[in-house]
Structure formats: structure tokens, C-alpha cells
Image (cartoon, rainbow, N blue to C red):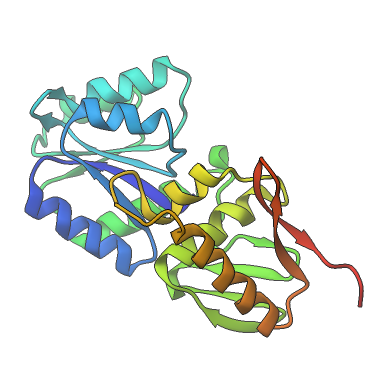
Length: 227
């Protein structure tokens, strides 16, 4: 999933990070506290967790320890005002994958998040493909049978989720979480509208890929093999 979790209680910084990542094709769910983030992490398979160390309800590194103790291998990038070598080493030994000291250029944060999304352990690709469909998150589009098709942000996240499943079923809540995150308020038929638009775009581009509804289970990609 090209959606990450950001645990940061500084509202202005969190919004700046969220908007910068969105411009790079990476959607972000923001949580101001460890407790809220922990609950969301039980429900959504985020690609990366970016967590500040100084949070109202504790040290962000405690969240990383919880994740690792629970067997979660999701890459974690720590944000901290502490630049002492001992702090960085201690954080890495506790399970963090990378450290970024405040203040930092947004370009560097984006580059580090992208690097973590490429981690082989997560089997993530920056331009994942299935059949004749290839997703280009940075460009906000997909290639269908060689033709570039623009996608709205929610459509992009839905296609990423479906392509990563490689034909396996994605449940409705997973697609909604991928498209709009945990905190956004969306209408009950928002997913149906987005899927309808995606089906039309796939058909208009001449793709053999279809989005099918598996009754009572969810949605999946299938390939029409008829020439």
C-alpha cells in the first residue's frame, strides 16, 4: 500500500508533511498520539510508519518496540530533535529502520520514505504492475496497454491496493482505508463511485483487466484472456 502512517503531535508540521507526501503520490494518515496510531495499525497495513519520538502519551520509540514485539515488520522512520549518536544507535537497536533529525528538508523525508517503501521485506514496488496495468504513483496515473490514464488520489490508492493483491480479493474496508484513510468521513457509496470510474477508465484505455465484485467477500482484479 502506498499509504503511510505519521505519528506527530505538531499539527502544522504534520500537515506540511502530509501535503508534501501527497504531492509525491504517497497518502498519509496522521495520528497525534501513540494510542490512536496503535489502534489504526491493527487495522491497516501501512507501507511505512513515520513516528516522532516526543509525543503526548510517550516516546514514539515505545510504539516501534510494540510493533516489533507483535511481529510487525513494517519499516519505521523516526523523527527526533535528538541528534546524539547514542540516541540514534539506541533507536535502531530498538527496531527503527531509519532516523531523521529535525529540522529536515521535505525532499529528504520523501526520499527516505520512498526508500523504505522499496524494502524487499515488504515486497513493495514503486511502479507495481499486474497484467497490462502498471501504476505510476509519482505521476498520479496508471498505464493501461501502453496508454497513460490519470487517476484521482483515491483511485490511485485503490488501484495500488488491488494490484498489490495480484488478483487476490481485497475486502471493502481495506479498499476504503487505502483510498481515504482511517479518519476521513466519506459517503457510504464513495467506494462504489470510485470503482465505477476505474472500470470505465480501464475499459476506455483498452485494458484487459477488470475489477470484479466477489459477492460477500470484496473486489479483485481479473484478466480477460479473450482477444
